[in-house]
Length: 179
Image (cartoon, rainbow, N blue to C red; front, top):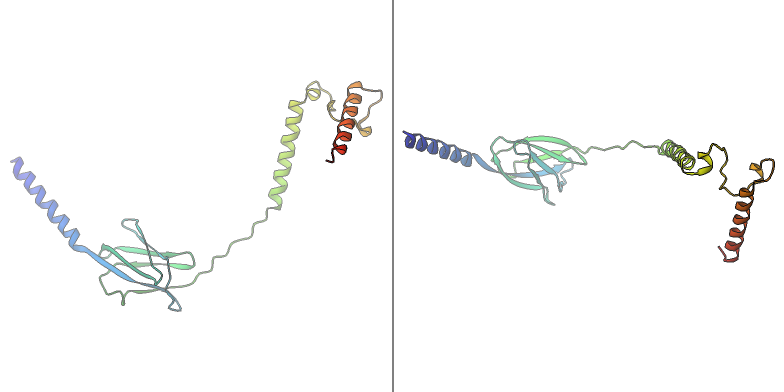
């Protein structure tokens, strides 16, 4: 009994396979623009298999598909078109695509740059306050910054004075080296 079922199953499978192989057709044709100029590298996408095929420099294509398969012709510069596979001659399979302009909207980056600058400044201020010991002690000035008369407080802070002297020496040395 098993042998009969197996044999029947194999016969059915082989007949289905043969039927599918018989229904494969050679589908070929040309793709042109409205002025009958061949469209090179137009893509033909099979809806059934999702395989892509492209046209050559003459706009010609030749593929093997099942009769009646749907294909989408796609190209960046032209409107899409859907066609059905058939076994007609390539001369009778001429498809014409309409030119389509793709307009890109302008993008202003000025506001984005301002937002990034503001975000980066806030991050730098946070990092400075987090990593500078003077801010961690609750002072509102950075004792490691070079001395400036605008930030001078009443009285002399020796650390600021030494920092200012060190900065002046550094600036003088850099000038002498020509930098």
